Amino acid sequence: MLQLRSLLLATAVVGLAACSDDVVQPDQSPSPDAPLTLRAVRSNPGPEQVVPGEVVVKLRAGAEAQVVGKAHGLALGSRGYRDAFVVLRGAAGSERALAAALQRDSRVVYAEPNYLRQPTGAVDPKLWAFYNPGGLNMLFTTGKSKGKALPSSYASTLDADEDAGPAGQTGAYGAGGSSVVIGSIDTGVDSDHPEFLSGQLIKGQDWYNNDADPEDDDGHGTHTTGTMVGRTVGIAGVSGAGSNIRVLVQKVCGRRGCPTAAIVSAIRAAADYPGMVAMNLSLGGSSESQAEKDAISYATGKNVLVIASAGNDGTTTVSCPACDPNAISVAALTWSSALAPYSNSGSGLDISAPGGSCYSNTTPEGCIYSAFLGGGYAWEQGTSMAAPQVTGTAGVVASKTTLRGGSLRSRILGTADGLGAPNTFGAGRLNTYRAVTNSALPAGQ
Image (tube, rainbow, N blue to C red; front, side, top):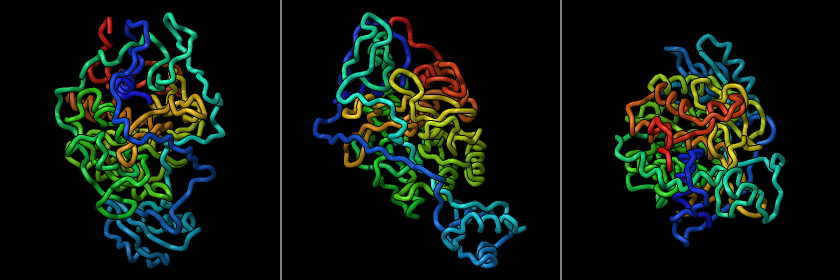
């Protein structure tokens, strides 16, 4: 089993050069009794789905939802966070026609289908390029062992550079900061998982089921949140900032996907939460909704970053809501800091971070390792795994500095390791150590 503490710290400082000429094996792992799983591949082929019969509507001041709905033969389904919008319900299959009719109503600001986003933690197998059963195809790229295979326990989140040295030498560079909050907008979180410190998780709303219990029944949200703050596998935990960073957990995804009505309510609720500095959305779809655009603008107007995955379609178009210019869009890198073959890229991409690259179809090494359901751990890959590394970094930087909003965004993007081709990598590869300290790793480490 890949051992963890050095792995995730390497994620946090990925790309920092060091003087060691030998591979340093990690020094700590979770309990050997914890179950380990390799997630199945998921994909979302075809046109973007919608919630059957539902339309998201923003009304003009003074307009009554029931009255407008009745005029169009629609029933009131639900109200968004603080009445930012309403959901009206009609016949399944007529969502776009209903939205178009409502848009012509003078009492309506906008109307659109309730789109279904999908978590971006899986890869379409047709895009996968590596078929090397049981064999290694990861090689050192520098140092005395250049050209030789890495051991199977070496991780995707380590650069393939044996000069990278033991990441643990950086120490607890995130310790001693102030208390901040980041947001998980996902499938919920396993609240009893030992990766999370006591009191670290703040129970928010389940907007998918419309209740107050955002418990995870999928694993995706536990994995992404573990990457952000887990005590042994998370950016905040490994950097030493774990005790200062809490997470507002909101569930917006279920078996069908992630309705935009749920996502928008969660974004707005997170933006209003005291101490919030950044939120993570490891989900996406093909077209941005106006409701999402308004919500992201609302959050950034309150100096809260919205960080989202760029998508796993392997195209040169960034998925939405990451496509919004006010969001921070995150592409996924492989173990060798190349763009992952599944990762979206293109105009408007902001930054890249390790997202995993399973180099064999029979072994899990090369994916991103994090918390999973039932107190276990799992290997996953995707832009879902890259985005929370940026969000966790935002939390640590905000904890250690007074930076917020645009200044926090500029620090994270401005300290990335440039990889060239902005449409492919954005500002470059996330460098948590540099983002927190605003300096490079000291010579000799």
